[in-house]
Image 1 (cartoon, one colour):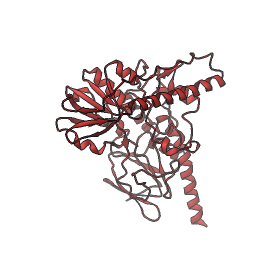
Image 2: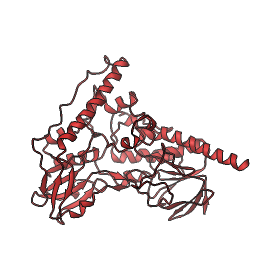
Image 3: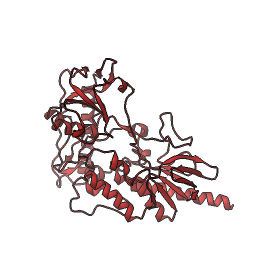
Image 4: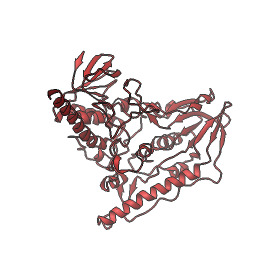
Length: 418
């Protein structure tokens, strides 16, 4: 049995940011990681993936990008090297290949059990990631046996996909990028489109992320929005980190031959896919949200005297939708050989034996402060800021929550000495 003040579950960028902040406060801690540092990037991403944010935006406490291509986008190996380099630079106390099997209260603090021994601690930081398990609808059991299924988590490259048609389910950043890659590989792709957020990669001569960073969009706090629950469910922007900084939206996919349908609503027992008739509405809503964002950025540019320093405002043409998108498809007769579920992820808290989960299995929290004494959450969508799930957002969240954790320890010490 080992003892430490704080156990951090995970060793991704969010966990490491918290480690750095705790070290600055001289709070002893350990990071318990089931695999290697940046494990999800190493084992659960496709080969051609690039980071969606430009290199300059990879900012962690005491660690920033120092290369010669600040506006480029890291490849997968470069992402792993960056996060692993950060762990080394801060001498993070990581125990790799240590799988947490349970976290429970032991009265005075918490008992953390692992496959390599147990730990007692006074505080716990849950930083195990938001994308542990791919979301696959229950009707997936009706997929015909001749049709292979993968998730965006298990997809690696076109070589693992059989010749023939592919149905990609989900049109956020993962789905659009995978659909683009597979269509270009020669496989006819159908993309089932649900809620999505369209966005230009470059706007008025600058990366969209530059605009959102400079205008304060990414710094908007969880307690400043009307419906934070809704904000935390917003899908990722349709962005791709390509060397040519091109915009990857539904029009770009249609241009190379990808067929668009509405959201996949079900699959019958005889293998017929059923699509929602909402495609046109979903695309119109996405176009509206994009216009609203760009109008806000234009107003900010004007108010900050930037109009003369950047390109003039422009708008992408509306998303093109055919007059009568298909509402059904016989998967086998239509030549579909593979379905890729790019329909989102969810965290896995099966090891968390604390009464802090909601009915959907998510940790309840107030800006990362969990309703269990001394327990905190890191790395989730819109945890404390709109940028919380980005590498660039972990630092500010870690500073806030490490301060709260330190105050909790101080208050506990005062109560004991009183």
